[in-house]
Length: 176
Image (cartoon, rainbow, N blue to C red):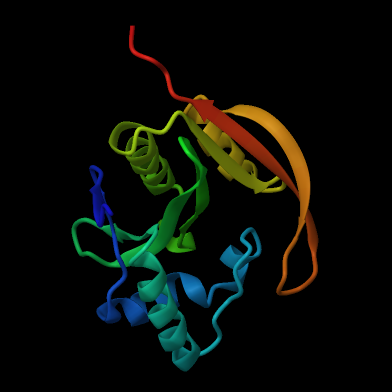
């Protein structure tokens, strides 16, 4: 298991108990950010403590990370990947706090996940999905050369809303 990834401005690392207040205030209680994600906002610090414990346990066995500023180690988001079939990796969500969006952190995060999936784990395909209305997310993956693959409807468990989701695929480029 790879516990840490670094980019120019970010560290993607496993969650720690000391991250509670920053991740809760930056991301987990933000209903606006949650609107383009599947997760449920966390309204109280007590609920955030429980969520952090579940996150720490989950990240022990999976490629899930907090996205942290390299300069301060403050968690400003989260991201991860999973391997649903050998050599095929899916992103499990990339989420950057509103106060830190439009600074290139999403691009650095996706780049780190692609490096992990292709170069470190030997993947051959990477799938990226986002709600169709999330045009910024779609532009992010297309900027890396992802191609549109298909659309599907998903229902968000917390509120029963249906969303059209677009799936994009990037194939590993073989070196010549």
